[in-house]
Amino acid sequence: MNCEEAGRLLDAYLDRELAGDQRLEIERHLSHCDACRSRAHETEAFRSFFRASAPRYRAPDRLRTRILTAVRSQRATPGAGRAFRRTIWLYAAAMLVVSLCLYLCLSLTVFLPDRDKPLCHAAVLDHSRSLAADHLVDVASGDRQVVKSWLGARLPFYPPVVDFPIAGYSLIGGRVVVIERRPVAVVVYRRDEEVASLFCWPVSGGTVMDRGRQIDGYRVDTWSNVECNYILISRLTEREHDALLDLLRDRLPSEIY
Figure 1: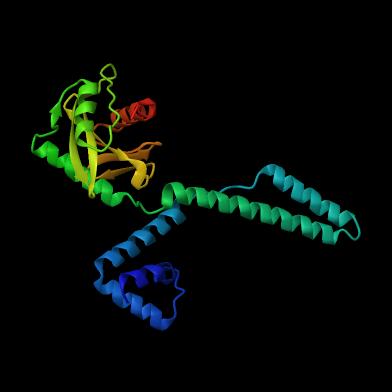
Figure 2: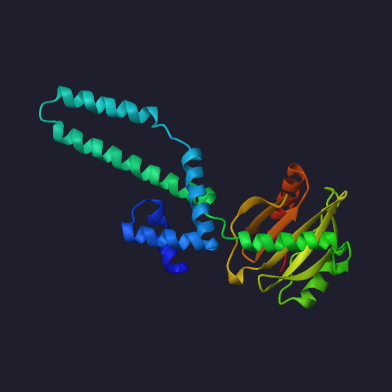
């Protein structure tokens, strides 16, 4: 069994739906394949998290009242049993649809595996290396037009560059890096002694998820707009990081690319 075959059978294996031979075959594969075993552990962790964390929704009191009223009406009216059963099935179907919609929404926003994880790890590695080497920028300037022009001359796109000195986040420059075989602009900000890197590239190759995470002690947020993908990385406090994130998300869509 190869990794592709194991991937197709993984969900059925975790649900204990595989027959004996298939189950033994995938277990044999998982025992010597680190990548598939890691994927299986991650999938099972998400399932456990969902079972433990998914909210339970109580039926509205109004629905309960209507069902009880229908029950009393059925008892009081001869020959109404068929209509009552039809009503109960309709309510049950409606509640099932609502539950499925809630489940899908939660799955899409919280419980899906983090497909951008390798990209974020690569960005965190670049950010940490720039700090360790004390080489934060290739162009050092607090002038947004200077930084934007310098980056645009070395990239196949002009990245948006914004500045928030009044809010305490100062633009210090930018650099060009390659992340996952794509050219990326990095706009660098400073707040007191802490540095934040904003990675930016066009969405032509696909968009990133709107998601926050912690990687190696760094706060990492990804999001997209109609033009670009973004990764914001810092070791600012949660409040300071979120404030910068809000400023960027508010200002970047209005920038001219």
